[in-house]
Image (tube, rainbow, N blue to C red; front, side, top):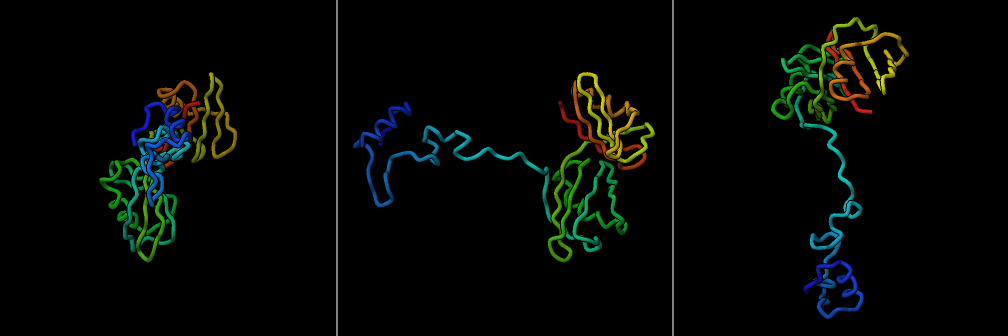
Length: 196
């Protein structure tokens, strides 16, 4: 069946019972369906949905026999250093980090879930690690700057101080922004910056 280039003409031809279409055992042959690339509405988002953004940069499985529990999070740095808030046996996270090697460059934040016995699924997302030399009295900082107005929370409580290194890092990317930072050690922080 040859269909007109104009979707309105195509619709009219289909309504008028055009002799160009052929009925077969499988149905009407020669008429494009919404899942057929030749259909005029194939590229409309409502036809197939809007694809979700990727949640992780890498996902894999690994065997980690020394790792206790069922869930663990850690941050890996470029030099191979691994940070976690959990009290774990030494080097128990190494098999997970080794499994991600080559799939995602460090630094990254990883989440691992036990699947069965010693088998873990581990997913990683690239992150930014920033050196914060200031003496911050907590382990978490949320900072918002909008048109020169500043709001800062330290460990979820309003604070009066400033963290110039975090603010400078964010202001190099956006004029108005929100920063979420979590302490990894004395001066290294995992930082996310979003525009306002």
